[in-house]
Length: 276
Image 1 (cartoon, rainbow, N blue to C red):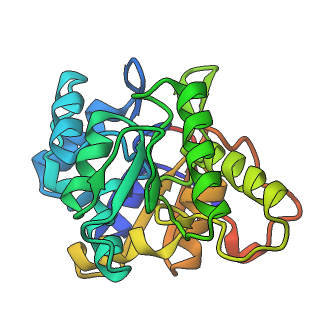
Image 2: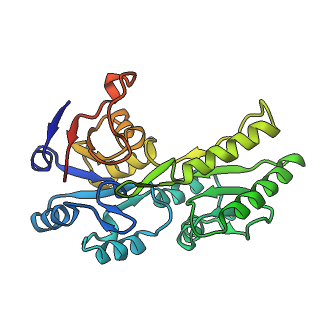
């Protein structure tokens, strides 16, 4: 593991995988170096994809938002956790399933595009999809959803639990952080374990980084394993890439601030990147 520059990563690898929050953008706009990097990649034709756990924005919505930040990123370059839902629903035979969706309007559209039928918060559902912490009355929405889930399980029915975005926290801007959907899932799982101790099947199916599904989609689109993941979180970006057999560069200044001594060597980032 050594410190490197973005130039070396561009030269060494066929494809760049870029995390969004904490690497390219924050909630207020593009982060330092992001515009220059995207302009360079577009100008030279270097293959790249955004590999993001975000499930709050459809690719076309995200592309428009990035353009507003001065980042010309086409929607077909965006591989988000939300885009994994159609394959997930197909694999679990959930077409037509009544779905409680916690997230934004686009989160609901992700589920509907996957074949789910969204129901109002608090109504009975067959599938719970936790997409984002925004877009609904947070505490009331969680309380009503948990109550509906308890009622369903109490009467002996089952429920599918799906978490596109496993992130616990995310970088909003320098020195400002936010709770993400993965933290919501931990709340639900703790509440389920309390009421139904020892009962199996009460954990969420996690789709985004560090899990393999999102990297498999990047491999399908790129056609090569000669990719490098550039991210700011050891637990998602770096771990996911390394477990999938890819190189990974940890960007300074994000969620992760160092390499714990307890972290196994095979999960260490290949490189440290102090700036884009």
